[in-house]
Image 1: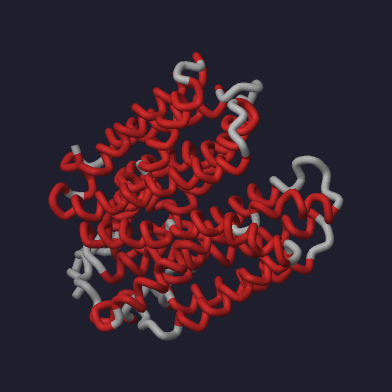
Image 2: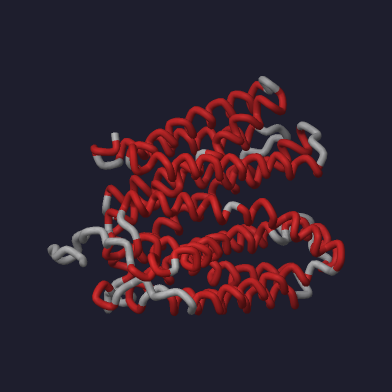
Length: 411
C-alpha cells in the first residue's frame, strides 16, 4: 500500500505486484519487447537506407533525416504518454501507441518519397515511445527502488538482442524482397505485441491513478523539472545519451572512412559495443542489491568521463590508431549498463506516485540529448574523428559533473 504523504510529495515504493509474480516470464517478455521498440524500428532498416534512397530518388543526406525525425518524435511523444498513463493506467496508452506504431510502419512501407517516409517515421516514433516509456513505469509500479534498477538492467540485457539481430535480419529481408517488406515486418511485430499486451495484468492500481494528470501535465512537468533529484539523475543519463548517439552517428565515418575498416567488419565493432552493454547490465544487476544503484551510477559516470577523455585524446592525436579510438569508445558505450538503468531508477524513485510522468520526462531529456549529441558530431566534423572524440569526451565529463547534484547518500 502507498504511504500517506502531504499532497505533491513522493510516496513509499510499492511492493512487488502479484500479477508479476504469477506470470513472471510473460511480463518480462512483454516489457523487454516494449523496451526494444525504439531500437528495432531503426536498426532493422539501416541496411536498406541506400536502396531506399535510390528507389525514392532522394537527395544526398535526405534519408538520414528519417533518423533525426524519429528521435524528435520519440522524445516529444513521451511527454504525452506519461501524463495519460498516470490518469488511466498503463495498458490502454501502450495499446494506442502500438496502433500508431503499426500505422506509421505501414505508412513507411507505402511511401513513394523520402518526405513521406520522414513524416511516417515521426508517427511511428510517437507510437513506439509509448511502449518504451511506459514499460519503465510498469517496472516502477511493480518493484521497489533497488529491485527496479535490477529488473531494468535485466530487461536491457534481454532487449539488447534487438540491435544485434536488427541489421542482420534487415539485410536478410533485402536478399529476398524489397525494403518495403522490412516495414511490413515491423507491422507484424506491432500486431503480435498488441495481442500479447492483453495477456498481462494492468500494473497501475486504480487507487494510485491521478485523475488530473493530463489537465495538470504542464505544471507537473514543471514541478518535476524543479526537483534537483530529477535533474541530477536525468542529467547523468542525458549526457551519456548525447555521447552514445554521437557514437552511433560518428563511428561509421571514423571507422570506415577514416581508418578504412571494411563495412562488413564495422558490424562486428558495433556488436562488440552491444555485448559490452549486456555484460555491464548483468554486472549491474548482480551488484545493485549490494552497493545500491546510486553508487554504481557514480562509478559508471566516472568511468564514462575517463573513457571520453581517452577517446578525445586518441581522436586529436591519432594515438593508438584505430584501437586507440575504438577501445575507449567501446568502454564508453558499455557503461550504458551502469548508467541508464540506475539513473532511471533514481529518477523514478524520487516521485513514485508520478512514475509515468517522471519516466516520460526523463526519456524526453535522454533522447533530446541524443539528438544534440548526434548533431554536434556533424557540427564539429573536419574530416577526422575529432568531432566524435570531442563530443563523447564532453558527454562523459557532463555526466560526471551531474553526479555532484545527486542526493548526498549517493556520494
